[in-house]
Length: 100
Image 1 (cartoon, rainbow, N blue to C red):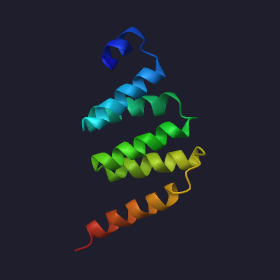
Image 2 (cartoon, rainbow, N blue to C red):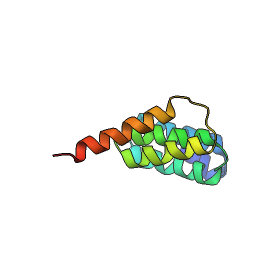
Image 3 (cartoon, rainbow, N blue to C red):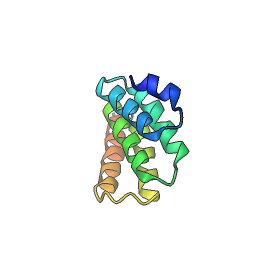
Image 4 (cartoon, one colour):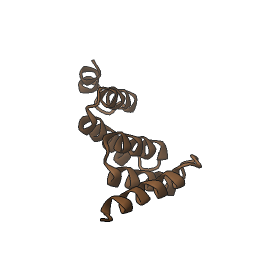
């Protein structure tokens, strides 16, 4: 349904966001991340899209994507006070996985 709506209104951010959310809920992470990336790139001034992209990256298990997106959200002024701690934890997790 959202894909059909998006074909008729390709620049509708609300429809794009709903499509991304639906795909992520269906665990179709690659597709959902693609649409969130489009939103974040199209609206770099909106840190909420970057946070959502980070959340999707975490759900997908893509630590690098999550760290990059959360860091961008922080840099763009997202107000979630937990984001820096989440980034630190993701970075720590990555370091411990690299250790023998």
